[in-house]
Length: 349
Length: 170
Image (cartoon, rainbow over all chains, first blue to last red; front, side, top):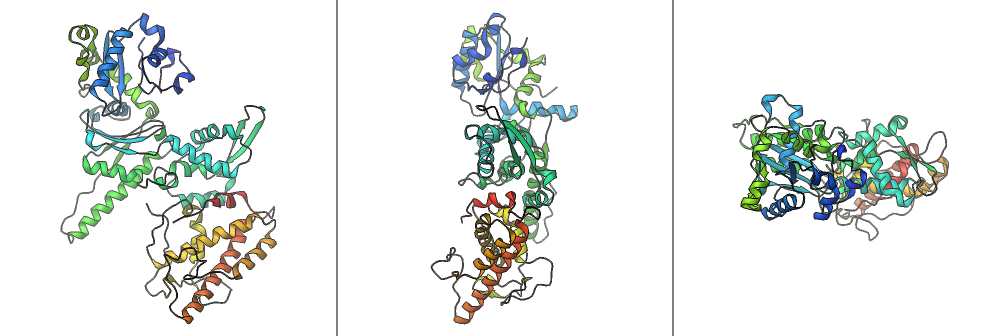
């Protein structure tokens, strides 16, 4: 049995038998690791893949290696960068010849969104950009909108109601003004009902879900709705990253990129920014320079939500994996510093 | 990313202060020229209102935008009043009163956005401005009543009213 665990503790294979409770705990140290892996791994040790965020320090990797080899007795360990695994996961939606570990990964989870450029499996650390808008902000925004309008929601459940509404009914629209008119013209078609249960009285409450459906995820493209300090839309941030690292391949990963049409809208907005710039440069040069139109491509695939886990799972199933893993024998001979460097593999497959 | 701007600015539009004196489709008397096209500035403001309230910053691109902003702010005032109305006829009365009550114009202490709008330079311009703003207010109030009140229940529709308790700050 293979066990693949993520440092943020979000995706855990069902066979490990650890349920919802595990998903909410944050990994903070050895004790947490113990909880996740449990006795099974210690009795039947297996090769492990751990993931790390980009710009992780080598000392952290050594510490991790110590824990894995000493406490859990794994025979082999490989520490992979999350963005690279997300790129590997995107291979499911491409032809064999196009599989590459080069791209810009837009990783959006609950806490923060990153745009990470990766070239041939190596992260270009100086060009990473952060966006302080992520799943949690969308949930708060929806909670605010619902609170003003709906009276049936029990106050202590308002956040989880907002979360459920977000995950079930939200989508990205091409233009908010047109959506507003669509909703006003035909409310029966667009306004949905959500049925929740009051945890204390066990009664049902019914609420209308209306404009939040498209306004929630819209904050990616208009951050000022939710955050007064940050105003750059995600398409502009990605454009900056592309300017710094000319990579035309964009891959999405993480739960908050799962909104319907997120990829399409991002592609459209990016294309607009890029086209405007090309047009400007053509005008400024008096029509002499005609830049070649740039193809903007955003890749979406089925495993986006757990893209990092899936990428890790895929790469670890290849035979090459065992060659690049650091073995316990090497650890005992040379010490934890062997884990500072984890070679990139899988490009040939 | 900017909020929605007005498309109605033309080269020959007259200005009053630094607001555009845009044509209106209205029965009320005043300095505004008659609008021949389908959509006028009030229609635009109402159409974009729901989106515009969420934007905390608004970039003024042209003078028509200033008119748009004024109408948008007035719409939120009207909606606050309409929330308390229980029927369409009551709503219409409230709107009429709100439209003609003494209101501040740019340059006077009560006007909310004095920083963006210039004072009228002479008495004549002041009269024109007051007349135009009054026209805007009355026509906006009338159109809002049409939109907000539900035909069957004769009560303000939930969807129109509640999101607008946000204040649009600049």
